[in-house]
Image (cartoon, rainbow, N blue to C red; front, side, top):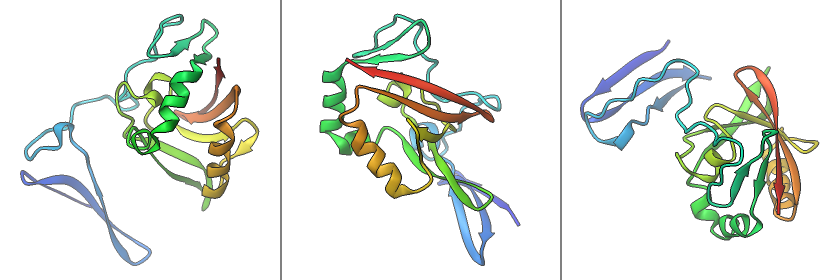
Length: 171
C-alpha cells in the first residue's frame, strides 16, 4: 500500500512496504526549504539543460555535428582529480529488470555539471560502457578505472524506453 505524506516542515514523501519493511522515498525540492514547491515538469521532461548545439564549447566539452562529444583531456583530468566533488554532481543507483541488475539509473544530475554537459539525463539507465555490461557494482568500478586512461569510449543508455549510444573522444 502506498501512502503519501507532506507537511510544510517535511519533504513530501511516498511511504510503502517492501519485503516486510517500511520504506520511504523523499522528494527533493528546489531550494530544499520548508514550504518549497517542486517545479512543474511534464512527464518525460528533463530537469537538466538541453544538450548544447553542435559546435558549442562548454568548459572543454564540444558537441560535434554527428552528436558525439569531444572532451578536453585537461578538463577530464581536472574532474577526476577531485572525485569527491565529481560524485556530488549526480547520483546513480542499480536498475533492476526481472529481478536482475541491468545498469545504473542516473538522477539528481546537477544543472551545468559534467554529466549534464556530456548529454546524460535524469532517468537514463547506463547499461554498457564500450562492450562492458554494467550489471554489477564491481564491474562498474572496474569500467570507471579503465575510462581514466581511455581516449575513445561509448556509453549505451536506456532513455525513454529506447537504447541510445553516446560517443566520446578525449583529446
